[in-house]
Length: 460
Image (cartoon, rainbow, N blue to C red):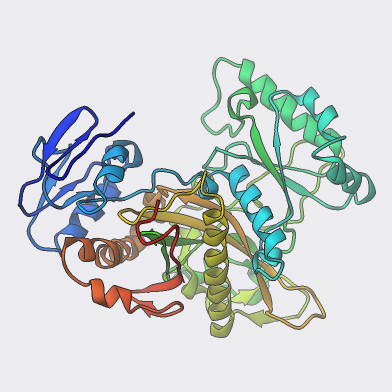
């Protein structure tokens, strides 16, 4: 679609707009996410006089238009055509971050160019593949997966995890430790595609519709803690009664302009509902229960809000993994883990920025991501941090409603911080304070991880 414009008017999406002077106008529409809609509206009340609409305003165009809405509701051509008058809550192109197979390719390329990057130790070994049917694996074992095939045959004790490149909520994730078990998984998916109806708790996917998958080394030594020990209202168990559960860390990350990246410091710990055990198959080679291994909140219905904690709430709790005896998680441990996360985020966005076809940050856009990390025990006998942080995935439009009622207050604080960092400078205040913000500095519970200029001052 071509866009024609001159100094006094703009043409986009078939409509002719003439700029007029008025207050800030905000498009706010989250029909599938009522909690997000409420948080956005509350955050905007701190700006002052704002006119909130549920659809784009009719011509003429206001001088300041904020599109803080779901990705599909944003007029992306307007974002591109009016960089000085429109601010939007999503980058138009960001596949390099949010699609697992694109992220794998970007990080692999970045690590080859930057062998000293923290990503070399924080990204699990990954293979990205494309297939629709199980029999296509025969060819892949002689091509993209030849080295994985060698490992499966020589190291039967190692496990790997399969993830669809474009699925979420734990859909399609499986564990395997042999060529045959991987083939069984894809044959299961093929059978699922022939079924007319699927059970509500079925996590199978249809390979012919997805095609893109990533395979990663399974991190079998995660940091384990009992979530029941951390509940403020629960009775603290005796140490011998505790059961170690796997968890991952969900941090909310804000990317602004082209390009600044901020990590929200109130990080969530999301637990599995069953105690962790090393993956193993029974004698009948039955499928493995994923509940001890997957920590997606959407799959952990049985645990409910007991499975969602602030990471800082785990300080002082027993570590139920590793080989170092009776230990507890200390404040310096948490601080070191957060610092590793910030460094990883910086290099992840640098890696994405090196692939402009798949990531194009714009100066008049910002976006909230939910980024997932897994903490494991560091290599024994080596100097360095006690714990190793591994990045799992980057999610656009994260399902914040799964945070639960107990911790909704952190979401209110998060959106207030987004308003201060991203919206207020656009609305006419606070730009000097934001520009003086240094990398690693924390303000408004946000730590700046990255401040770089992408493709000149005007972005793309």
